[in-house]
Image (cartoon, rainbow, N blue to C red):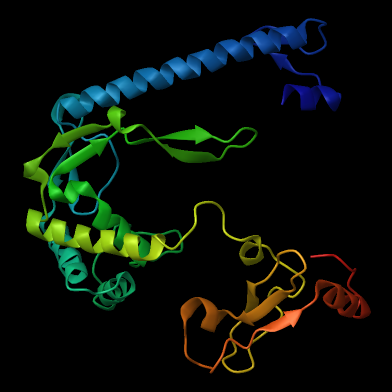
Amino acid sequence: MFEKLNFAGVRLIAISQGIDSNHEQAQVLVTVHGMVDSLYVQELAKKTHRGLDGSLLRGRHTGGRIFGYDNVALSENQGVVLAINQGEAAVVRRIFQMSANGISLKKIATTLNDEHLPTPRPQARNGWATWCHTAIREMLYRELYAGTIIWNRSRFVRVPGTNRRVRRIRPQSEWRIVQREDLRIVDQDLWEQVSRRLQGFKELYHSRLQPGLLPRSETTKFLFSGLLKCGRCGGNLAIVAGGRKQQYRKYGCSQHWYRGRMLQQSARTARVARKTSSRRLADRGFEAGSR
């Protein structure tokens, strides 16, 4: 910010630090104060982390709101503890039972929405809140419902040059695992049954995936992205194969390719040369090679 304002010819005066951008030593002073402030923020983060660690050991709650529990504030600012909300706990048990019975995540969310049951977020940004399959999945993986608290599992790292943060998993040796049977909502047999089912899905679908990024042909937008439609079902045509050396990329029905919908007898893939595509788009007023 200092460099941008200085480049724009704007004079900046920091009252508390006594820095004037017109002074010849302003750049050095800004750098020194920046280093001091950075160290202060790091030390403050460490102190906050130690305080949360101590709160966990004293049986206090260190996070936000969790569906199935109430945050109960203790007297004299002694922190917050969790207490089971029996109404929401019944919904949690039902979700686990439905999953154990083989019902899909999407079907569970649809059923809860049809019955207008309370959601983890009572009020969404758009003014209403509903259940979604991602929330169901996260609940099925939450160990707290089985009476186990796992804290310090991850940390957030800021992306350089942005205000965005990404989540990084800590080594398992740094995790804090506390058993709290008084907070158990789901019995052990039901928890293990659902866990085995989820693990089976992982082994079934993830074992066929190669480590690394997805093929570029599946993630990159090309000239015809969003323009081509399937003549049989109306689904979008997407690049489903090709892209290697001396191979043309092939467009196919995304509904049939990714979802396996039997709306047609074959994938009806069509070879499309990028040179030919660029020439046709150029005739329609697009620049060749643009995306």
